[in-house]
Amino acid sequence: MKQKTVYLCGDCGYESAKWYGKCPSCGAWNTMSEYKVQPEPATRGVTSFARGASRPALLQEIAVDDEARFYSGIGELDRVLGGGAVHGSFVLVGGEPGIGKSTLLLQMCQEMCKNAKVLYVSGEESLRQIKLRASRLKIASSNLFVLAETDMEQILSETEMLSPDILIVDSIQTVYKRDLTAAPGGTTQIKECAMSLMQYAKNKNVTIFIVGHVNKEGTLAGPKILEHMVDCVLYFEGEQAGPFRCLRAAKNRYGSTNEIGVFEMSDHGLLEVQNPSAAMLAGHPSGASGNCIVCVMEGSRPMLAEVQALAAKTQFGMPRRTAAGVDYNRMVLLLAILEKRCGLFLSSSDVYVNVVGGMRLDEPAVDLPMVLAIASSFRDKPLPEGVMSFGEIGLTGELRAVSNASQRIGEAYRLGFHTCVMPDQELSDKLPGKMNIVRVKTVGEAISAVL
Ligand code: TYD
Ligand code: MG
Image 1 (cartoon, rainbow, N blue to C red):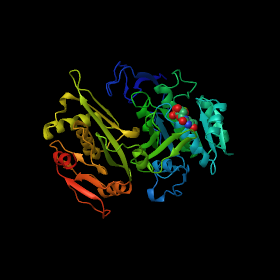
Image 2 (cartoon, rainbow, N blue to C red):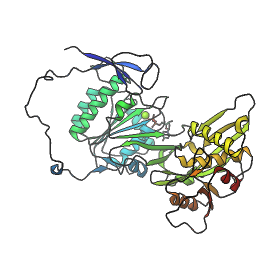
Image 3 (tube, protein in one colour):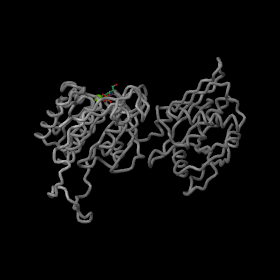
Image 4 (cartoon, rainbow, N blue to C red):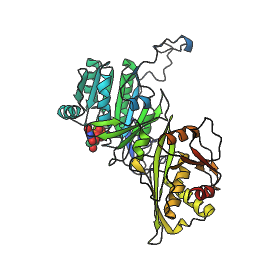
């Protein structure tokens, strides 16, 4: 039978019969690579009414045990997984090289191998290197097996022999199947290897974690190909230079995708950050202009963060704008609102916005604090001590309500803030008595209330 060849985009998984220099779907250059489709078995097209192994079943008659889970003992990780890793689930842990994926998974083994047999397969490190890392992380466990291997068949046959409850493959970009001509790390290899692992996970009810490196553009090689296959996608992100790392669920068939876990990288591996708000505010300068504290909701948790802005006179022609930790386009839009609605002439100023601690804040509630930080820097006037804020801004400069306002105020109060500048909205819960709530309807009102 003739083998069919298609071309797949390594970034978005777009499939076409023709090769393109630029992917028609995501617009990336030079990402299309050849993928040989395995010929279908010859039975196809022949009408066969033989009853196979899979048959329709009545939903109410399907017997399942309670959703059993493995716990890592790392509270932040278990929460992001939706309360531990479900037996037989397939989890992808993505992140930039060097962010700490291997460290996190090795630390996870520490607790998991108390109740389960765990096999950690590394295609990147030798057994000696793994041992040295484990000693540094003080992992001493009798039920943890390690294997340094990149050949997929070999990995599967060793796994079959050992029959572990949990299998970790670090990383999917280094493993390969011998019968494919494509190089490891390419779309074909990643797709085929992940497919074999998925079949193994489902047939044997083994929980599999795979590590996937993210390329510079922020997408895994073949992210769509992997993302639709797996049950959970966790991304590990943060500034490499900074101490904080944030674990986010981008997809979870067994829980919510809003939760995040916050970690700190130390000499002895990753430490959970129990009180992220306090950690993010450490070193918050008092009496300096150009910063504002925001309370964002990360899943079910309120978290405080510091937004900083610097507005400086433009030296040459075009003003520069950079945004770290907030959306660039959102920042540009807010600058336009400040100019048009509040008369702050920022078009001859360079504006830099940054979120302290390397956090990424994607919530609209960060609009108002960002605007206050920019206005504060522009006028070179600090916000009063103990002020925090949240609120979404509309195009006419009006403030819009955000969710969970009471919870946000509660968290700010707990960390010693006494004034909250927020949209004019109803509050559901009772507030701490001493909190001073400043309700504002427009950006202009907010600025004149505090600056
Ligand atoms: P690693 O887990 O190897 O990253 P990944 O698997 O995502 O590529 O983490 C590597 C980084 O973490 C490296 O820069 C060193 C740092 N690190 C520590 O700071 N402390 C430690 O105890 C360990 C194990 C790593
Ligand atoms: Mg690694």
